[in-house]
Image 1: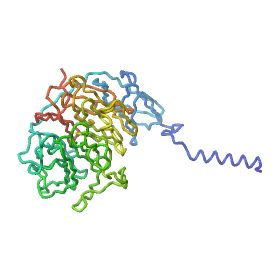
Image 2: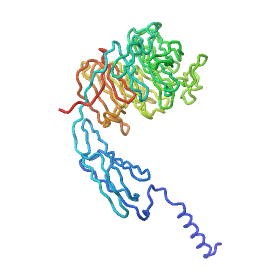
Image 3: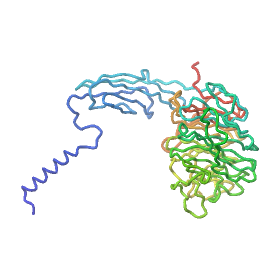
Image 4: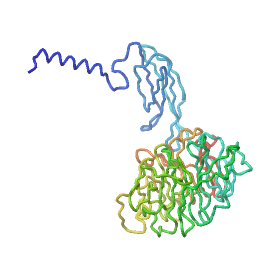
Length: 479
């Protein structure tokens, strides 16, 4: 047995070791001598609405707070306190002094008071172009140009507010625009600046869905290289000329995604959306990093149905009716899926969450489709939905948009925007705590049916009307 003297020695050593290990806390329990503190007081915000106040200072100090507090153990020096404008519904809360400077002295506490007041945020639209058959607008990141996709098979470039006379791409001889078909979207490769690759999604004369890779001309960045074409995938779409889906894009993981419709016909008569051996009614995920003629794409090994008999390995998600538009926002995916006759829906999931079944044609939104009861086990319910209402008063066909991440309207950051072809409105919600909050209707001029959204290289959003006119969403001037 240990002697009492030895026990004392061991206990003393243990205390010394714990002292040497320190603490996991961000700030030491006892502030070093010579440091000071900064108290930030917030006033004027409604209860429950968090602020976004950024504090920066000496030695690369940076901290963001959502409520008033005292920051201790600060090195002496000048600190900048910046208060972001906060949006709640369409009420914008701004600090009377959005940027303040405080000097922290050793052994003292500096105080900064941030006072907020509210005003109504109003949006409007500004026409930027008119292109017959326009269905999409996009641009490479930080590029000042806008690329406008025409259903007939052309891509036009708008530079400094003017359309260039020569199309970026013209494949009208290979595109069939019957029904809902045509050239429906394009996506720039994440490394477009170095490899010049972009991808297009269109329907051909045989009614197939086709995704191709093209390249920009090395001699003129406003022109595509006509001979540099690689077919990535061709999906048979026999019969109906609707429900093609229509969007191709890159996810945050660098893989190529495309969302196909169920093949058309009321109620998915072929049962494609729930058929694991069909590529219709699905979200597909492909690796095109080393695409070439003999092997235009690889299957990412993390795709959920790799190696499973009777299940196509390209499938990332299933149970979609007509996902006309979807959008990635960081590590989150928003899919707007057009309903049959009663419900329109937006599905929200983690971008890395595979094998989700969004329910069609077992369900339409959270309703059993064409049945009094149904089994929804294993199905993912929409994060947001709305009923058409009597005489389609709420709409009839959702037009999915994007999450705003631009700089012109910073208070809109994180809001997902959408419209409806029959409604012609502009609405948004904030997806927070697993629910669609702050559902807001924005009053904008009547521009008719809205068939698509666009997003430029700076993250600003555009509306594309059925008339072919394109509008940028902007801040309305104060009355």
